[in-house]
Image 1 (spheres, rainbow, N blue to C red):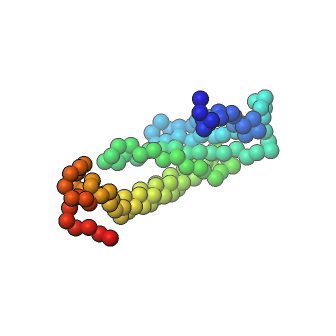
Image 2 (cartoon, helix red, strand yellow):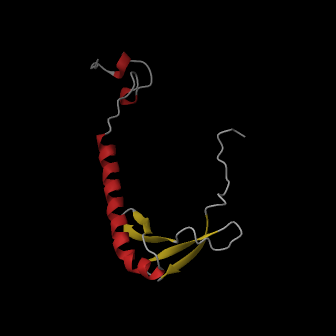
Image 3 (cartoon, one colour):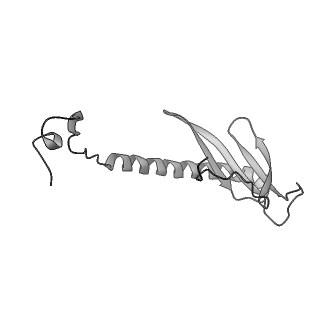
Length: 131
């Protein structure tokens, strides 16, 4: 096997128990409770909440995953709508930026490859040559 293969080793000091809460309609909240390597609660690290939902677009379902800065499940449920909206806005900005980059990219064919020519003809594929 090549030496560039990834190492699949869990970080024993960064383990979590995961619980999922959902309304089965809009989305879900994952509560990540820190635990020690023997599965006992680790009070030295904070609980994390991760929101998940999706929106339907003309291209299909767009999943949104976002952190919810909360200390309790009740706070996470309360903050879910605002955090989901923020994640949607950030995703829309990123997609717009990708579109801009794609639209502004200029493809310059290599000499001899213009207009699908693979051989023969004049060098550069035509009469106009930029230098």
